Image 1 (cartoon, rainbow, N blue to C red):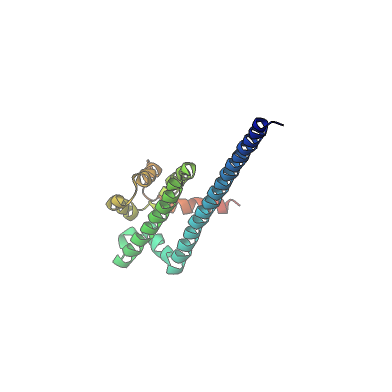
Image 2: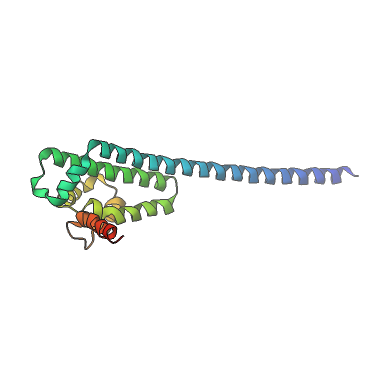
Length: 174
């Protein structure tokens, strides 16, 4: 075997080794991205669970019910509770949106906007919550505010209470 043939074999083997190494690096990066995505999703769900438990423990449901059924009798303390409830709702979704958007998970970010649009009628069904939305739109990402607005399009006041009536109707039919 000539020295030039040996040199060609060595170069071929080195090129194959480099290709295999690049494939391995690509696989490792893909795995790291999957782990990061799973961690981000897990963190987002943890935030929702913790905030929901906190709202239950704080007893905000009584204030929410009053805002739906008897909004004119809301005390200042209850308006403050509603303000905090709505802030938590918006901030949680904004956090989730940011994480998905900046982690280059645009399909998940779109899913979050669709979820906001779907839930808007239940969260922003009262006069207070709609007024709050207008007053506090400055603190929301445009995409978040626009999703809420799409969800409220042609939705009358009282849609939050209507949601629970719909559940009652379904339950009565079972």
